[in-house]
Length: 128
Image (tube, rainbow, N blue to C red; front, side, top):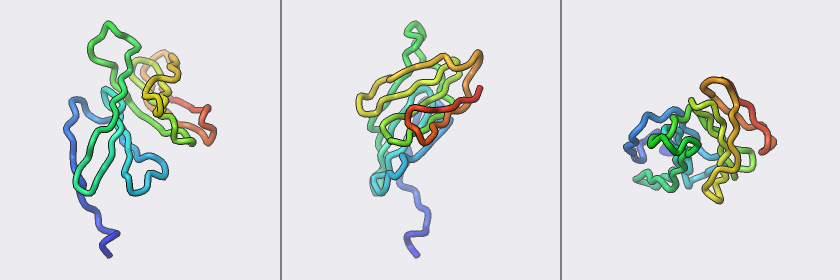
């Protein structure tokens, strides 16, 4: 059965290793997914390509030209937000419609390694 075969749709070069990749919940055939690395990037797949549609950068420390690496991400249950965790001790909640930070918390004393939303789009947990 052709639908059960895996195949490559495309590839993309990124300047920093990706630490997490996750398809949007219920993304269907549009193939929307996100990656965490030195930035949060939203991607869309077509039949033969992968295209970056949005890049969101953590600018907490504007003196540093390179943003702190992100360690993980998770989509909110309402699909309107993505939470990211970072080695800079923060968790950042991104409003995808506006393309900007909704809130940023200093979540731990050291690097934050993972983040997960609950079924409530306003509640998440992190580990560091």
